[in-house]
Amino acid sequence: MHAITDWLRGLSGPVVYAVVGAMVFTEDALFFSFFIPGETAAVLGGFIAHQGSVSLGWMVLVVVCAAVLGDSAGYEIGRHLGPAILRTRPLQRHAKRVGTAQDLIRRRGPAAVFVGRFIAFFRPLVPSLAGMSRMPYRRFLLYNALGGLAWAFGFTLLGYFAGAAYTRVEGTVGRVAAITIAGLVAVALLVWFLRRHHARGHEPSDEDGGGER
Image (cartoon, rainbow, N blue to C red; front, side, top):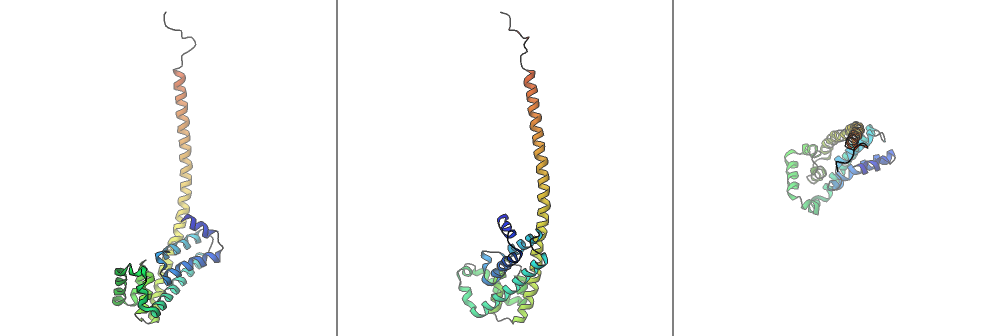
């Protein structure tokens, strides 16, 4: 995590927005959740915003747009490619969970689009299944936008407040470490002084003679 955040902080503001937005978009549109969890991207975006490299408001907007557009792209992919998506190797390995998502679409309809946004495996899958089922796009878009808005706000703000907590903890840890080190040094000096004093107390004096001959 440190390596990623340090790398992002070294980028210019527009590039940070682009990277985070691309990570969220590709997860939803191209099933990259197996490699790049969208929550991680959103939380990182919020964390970087707290560091002052980017604006929190713009970051939330970027994550919302990327989430909604990514789901819309997933919907179109499902609508045009249909069941061929389900025959891909990653989804065949999770056939049971895919069946659960399909059942969720059948039973809950558009509400499944909103709920699926908050379930890691379902997030990139539900939009494509909605497209396969020929759900009207306007209905899909409404629930997609509501879910994307709530999800983006939640996880981006989580990253922002985590950054604030991290800063406080980092400062506290620094003070505690300094106090601990100072205490250890004091104890070490005390032990050294006592040992030296004890050793001097047992040294033979010059007036001591040998025993009787």
